[in-house]
Length: 434
Ligand SMILES: Nc1nc2c(c(=O)[nH]1)N[C@H]1C(S)=C(S)[C@@H](COP(=O)(O)O)O[C@H]1N2
Ligand SMILES: [Mo]
Image 1: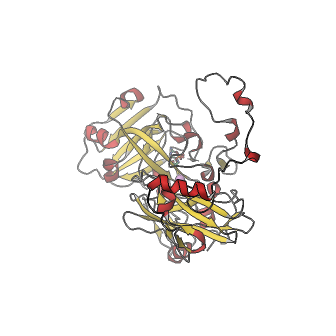
Image 2: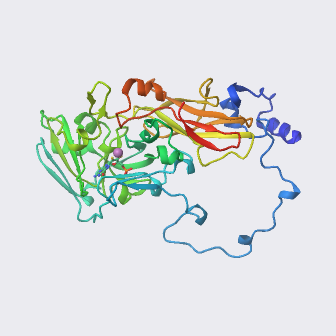
Image 3: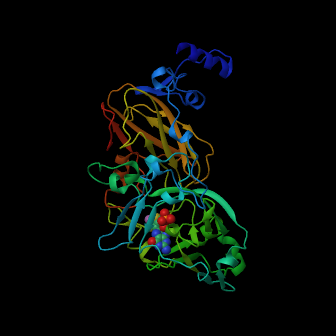
């Protein structure tokens, strides 16, 4: 093993190897080592050493021809058990949500079939040929589009996250930590490549009245979900999204067209979009008065809290993914901010006593999920792992205590506290409050 270790290092750079550098308590290693070196270079020995006991016979799939081509691909049958966790409001089939199983995924993109869902009255079955989008209100001329006309406008593509502002409150605001997987606790966030027509192009074409300051967006579902959006956002980076990860939107995510407001709370990205009315003031809809407002300890409520704040969570290890025994592990997680790019993610393996900077996986994009990684040599003793993200505006993901001190526990949205997982001596991982 030592021989392979030396040979590796020589061929990698030809220079003398750097000292193995532990940068924080309980075994966190320097991010540079992890970016370019394997397990052997980190002193753990190779995880892939070939021994006689591990040699394989020719597997059966190499002895017979494989399956034919298919018109539409599907997952390996061994992966079919990876599912969204769906929950409906009592007495309803389609009002509720489903959560992305974050612990089963890697990279920055959420596969469309595992994108989280949040519906207020189920998924409508919309015939795209019969769907229409009306733009009216404080404009020079009202516009009325079918999908063919809409699709002839210039499109842009962006990789961006969407997060329900109710995400994470289930555990964050509970007095005792709730048991569940990472996805069950934090899975109301997903990241896709969205392609569509910038809303500004259509508003320009309609011609804005000088008194216009807001728009009202309305969905074609039975809930007729309706939200007010400041005109500045509508003219900045709002998208009428038609494609998701290269294919037409999934029905669950707004087929055939949705509003997409980068970085803003998910509720405002109205799905199955049928109408935009340009207005002088917000319309004070149900979703921005009785819902999606945050009750503070002094009895006042915050309204129109649009951007999603900086946040991160370790997806592996996480509850349900137990560690096989002491040794070298990759801590992997996701970070995002509705205010811009992720600037830095720090990881602790000693409950927040010491922190080390994680490696960010390129590309690091504006208002997109960013993958972070950290090498960790686990010594087998109980440990508490946590991550803390900082975005390019300098905003730092807060501790749970700090949020509760500032906002109490009666609010329901925009909880972005640091998540801690406790790794037991048996390798089991559980959700804890620190
Ligand atoms: N028309 C309509 N748009 C909607 C909703 C809805 O129920 N109806 N739910 C909203 C909420 S609360 C969220 S968090 C996002 C979720 O988007 P997704 O289901 O594509 O993940 O859609 C928003 N847009
Ligand atoms: Mo939401």
